[in-house]
Length: 291
Image 1 (tube, rainbow, N blue to C red):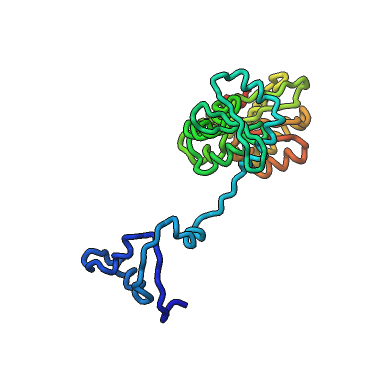
Image 2 (image 1 turned 90 degrees about the vertical axis):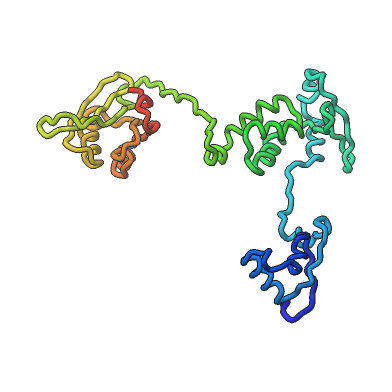
């Protein structure tokens, strides 16, 4: 397409236009190879400013799609019941009315020498997602970016909570700042409806038995210790069924840790056939068993 034709290359990379005029000893072998390849087509390279190089820039820049619609925000402001109360409670703010090109009125705070639109409730999370989703900055940086551009009641606290709850930040960043609340055990009023089971051992052998499957009823605290010679999924499932289910009935919920015996498909199938729900506790945290 280009070979054999005369044409001019326009670039906003100004040092490139002097590349063919410099001595070869000033260029690296890689640069020499690139220049040699370009010279097969043309050496007429001219400079163009970046603001005028719109053809190449348009192809390399993603079209900007904004969810911040000032017309819709202005319309929501007129029906927002918290706006007047917010203005009355914050006398340090200076709200002024701006007329948009569409003719709608937009309230903005100008107390910081910037136009900060008041954001109604329905737009707050959308604006946060757009600003924070660009590069997932930290909590402080996210709060600063939004607080300097927009205003609404409790903006610092709300943005901080949203930034701390960002799943992508939790997965990618070293500092994981979200802490889960302590779970509460379900209250029961029926015996043998919820049972906690776990494995203990190995212990000193006794008649070939070195492990114990412990089963504790949450309501009555009745405990059974079932001796086992080994702790395969088949043996654990069989012992639990014969020594607990057949004697005390099928529980509605079985609480275990994340041992491989209780994660096995055989144990899951046994619970599914019996109609019991299996609930696993936090790994490496035995206190979560509760019993």
